[in-house]
Every structure is written in C-alpha cells, then in structure tokens.
Image 1 (cartoon, rainbow over the protein chains, first blue to last red):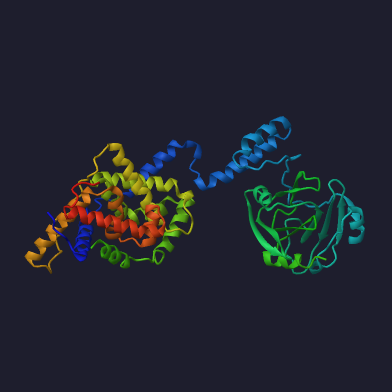
Image 2: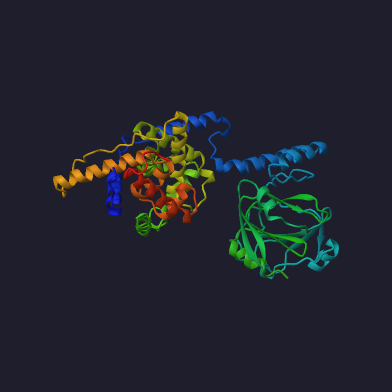
Length: 262
Length: 206
C-alpha cells in the first residue's frame, strides 16, 4: 500500500495500457450493415428514403393535402390546426395549376393586346417596366383577372431558343408579393432554387424544371402562377409588383438583363 | 502533488482537432446522408477500432464492446440527418458508441468494477527494457489497471479518450458532451482519483 507513482510513471503506465488494450477481432461492417438493413425493413414506411428527405416529402404531402381539401373549407381549418402544430405553413388556393404544355406548333397568349408599354401600364393600373437589354418587346398582352402583363420577345440575337417555338424570352409582371420560402416549397421537385442579389434586393433564381410558383396577391390571397417556359426563371419583387424573366440564359445573364429594367 | 499532474497532462494535450482527416470524413458523411451505404461502410471500417476501444473501456469485455460498437454504428447511421454538417465525425460517433455501451452495462445491472484487462506481453514490444525494468513496468501497469477498474465510468472514459484514443481537447469535449473548458478539470479530477486508488488511499470508488 501507499505506493506512489510519479506523473511520468503514471502517464507511461496509461500509455502502456492503451497499447495493450484488446484489438478488434473482426471487421464490424458486415454486421452493422445487416443491422441497418434489418432496421430499415422494420421501418417499411420510410421505403428506403434517407431521413433527410422525409421533411421535404412531408411538406409536399401536406401541401397536396391542403390543395385537395381546398374545396371543403371547414376541413382546411382542421388541417391547419393539425398540421400547423407541426410547423407546416398552410395556404388556401383557389385551384391547382397544371403544367403548361411547352411544345406545340403555335404559341398563343391570352389577354388584350397593347401597343406599347405605356398603354399596357394604363390598362394594368401599374407602371409596366421593360428590360433595356432586350430592346422593345415584340408583343405585349394584358390579362384582366388577375391583372397580368406579358412582354413577348421573339428571336433575339444572343438569346438561345426556348421550349416555346419562336420565343426567346418572356417577361411577366403583376401586382403581388413574393415569399421566398413559399416559392421554394412550391416550385416543384425538378426545380433548383437560389437567391441572388439584384438592385439592392434579393431575387430568386429558379433553374432545372420549375413549373409554377405561388405568391400573395394584393388582397393577401395565395395565388399560383404557371411558368410558360418551364425553364430558367428569375423572380423578384419591387414596389409591390412581381417580375419574372423566363429565358434560357445563365443566372448571371438573367441578373444582368434584370438590372436593366426601367 | 496533485496539482502538477493535472497541469502536465493538460499542457501536453493536442488541440488541433480539425486538421487532416475530417475533411474526407465530411465527404463520406454527406454521401451516407444521401443514401450511399458504402460510404458509411468506409466510415465504419475507419473507426471500428476506436469505437470498440471506447466501448471496451466501459463494458470491460471484448464481446460486449464489439456488440455495443455495432449498435452504436447502427444508431449513428440513422441519426446522420441530425449530424451538424462541418462538425467532426469521430467524436460525434464515439459519443453515441459510449452511450450505447453505458446503456448496455446499466441494463445488465453490473457492479461498478469492470473486468478490464490487457495483453500482458506484446510479441515484439519492450525489447529496449531490461528484465528488471520490464517487470517493474508490468507491475505498474497492473497497479494502474487495477485502479482503472475501480474508477467511475465517466472517469475511465475521460482518461481513455486522452491516453488510449489520443483525442484532442476539442474532440474530447464533443465526445463527452461537455464544454471545452470542462475537459481539463474533468481529466485532472479523474487522474487524481486514479492516483488515489492506485496509491491505496481509496480502495473503492467513492
């Protein structure tokens, strides 16, 4: 008893013990893999989906559920009650959008034809702006309900062709407020989302195959908007007006064009 | 007597936790998070020795240690989506494995002491020592090992992380789930107790 070790002796003894601890006798991976597979099989509902994917899937399902329930408002309230607790935002929409066919011989635009940006502004009731980088639009259409202005740019030098024959870019403007989180959740599974700085604010760059996005109209209602080209799209909001530029250009080029709006 | 020991140990501690390996760990973790099971297999193979040692220090038997390590690896796999990206993987894993080993011991209702044992003579080691010195080293080893067996799980673990697994201070903090500043005091406290038990001042974990 009473035998005292010096610091060095104690540390040396510990190091010696560390070196002599039993070595692993076998490769653990095959057994671990088996346990993982077994546990996964028990969780049949996960269907082998990585857990990181479950939240987006749940959010998508929740949105789909609400879209389905939109026709029965009393149920919506209940769904909001149930789902709201789980942190899922609930929005009421009037209709579910279906992707526009993007190929076809002729391209048609709805609404009243306007001769100039000034005329379009008068009909629409808000100042319509256009990108100087693209020159004057070839056609301008103003939809009535909801009010929406579409600037059509047919072939333009330096702009690649799009999915719509004879169209190289579209600019759509309407009164509405964007919520980036909402845009992100509703852009569709094929869409890739990115925030980009624009004119001191933030724009959303949608690439991949976005089909639609949602926004809040001036009355605060949740509205869906279908993208015509289902391609690269830059979305931004300025002064209560939502702008979108659809063209097969790079993010940088889209931002450059957008910065020339006047 | 006790104070210098704590200081010596702390001064010698490595604090560079993020250099080298973790960058590659992060890649494997990310691939595993996206469902690449083979990437996770690589991580298992990389850390199974460390994980088993960690579990062994707690369970005291090799068979249970390997079992605990396997369960730890399995749990960690299903917890990957909670893994903070950019964080070091190794201490995060060891924490899960250590918890698994502790639960196992608790479930078995074991007494505080463990059957910790080490290989007495390595085939190629100790050649530089004279027979007398080797005998003395062996005696000290036995003494310290006996003291380790009587220590609390927590004390054994902090000593093991430092001396058997060679973790850095930051990694120890992460693996123990404590603030970085707490690591030093925990380690010196554990060493004080180890010394007390080894010197026969305390015969049982108290």
